[in-house]
Length: 168
Image (cartoon, rainbow, N blue to C red; front, top):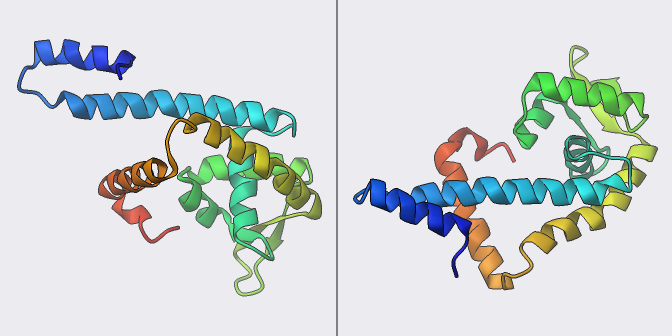
């Protein structure tokens, strides 16, 4: 099967016959797919008045289980975002009543973000449509192909982000 990236790889091969054009192909396909995943996510979350960056935080807190809370630093590490961007996101989610900030019982200097009942309900409602959006992108792959691709992408990610191995 030929896609638009295949044509790009052929052009690069002409310019750099001994170059590793497959790596450029992987990178380009990942970027293009990221854009498709992002748009599908945005479309799926629009009915819930959410955007992807809000969903990332709500979903991360939901996945943690009761009491559905984490520090901004943990949220930043798990979502791969900066602490500053997480602080901004938490402010916005707090304004909407989807999370609340509480002082840690273990360390009074540490502030935790916790899903409110409203935030938990919203995250649970948005879950299936968000998963379906991602599934729609990879729908032409068989289950074993998805598993294989997921493992390969994980291997690449560990190679470029070894600090992230123990974070999740």
